[in-house]
Image 1: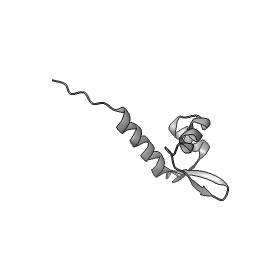
Image 2: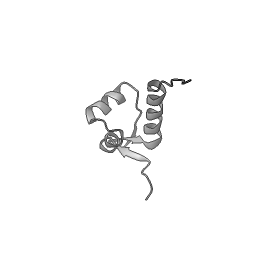
Image 3: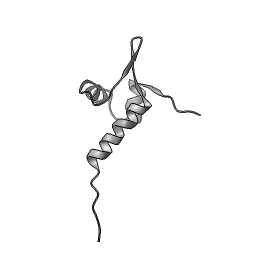
Image 4: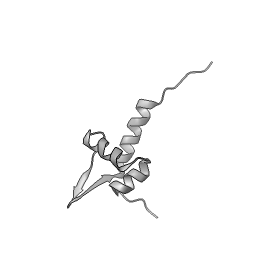
Length: 66
């Protein structure tokens, strides 16, 4: 089974484990980009992956050990 390249708002919120309103806040702030197909807003898999990578870059602090 192949992964879908386009995700509805509901599917993206499930994939990111975020609520729908939180997802819309991220979209409105420009942190998560969407594409419009007809009247539907969709989020690409690439954009979801990019968002996760940005979170990792901002959140991970590596501590060196002796």
